[in-house]
Length: 89
Image (cartoon, rainbow, N blue to C red):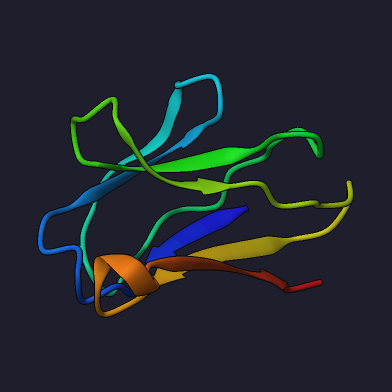
């Protein structure tokens, strides 16, 4: 799994974490991609402003073991902030 920040509304860096609050990616800037991470197929994710513990966006994706995925966030306003899941393999 990797994460990409494509949202123009997020003017500060963001963190991606698992639903339990553990951060996987910290300080990801706009138009930047993270490294790939091996994760459990049952994992749900959340988006945070960098350094914050308040969830901006829940990312309840369904993934299958053995595949490579990319999650990216986009949106030009807070109301249009959304996530997208792409299976790469």
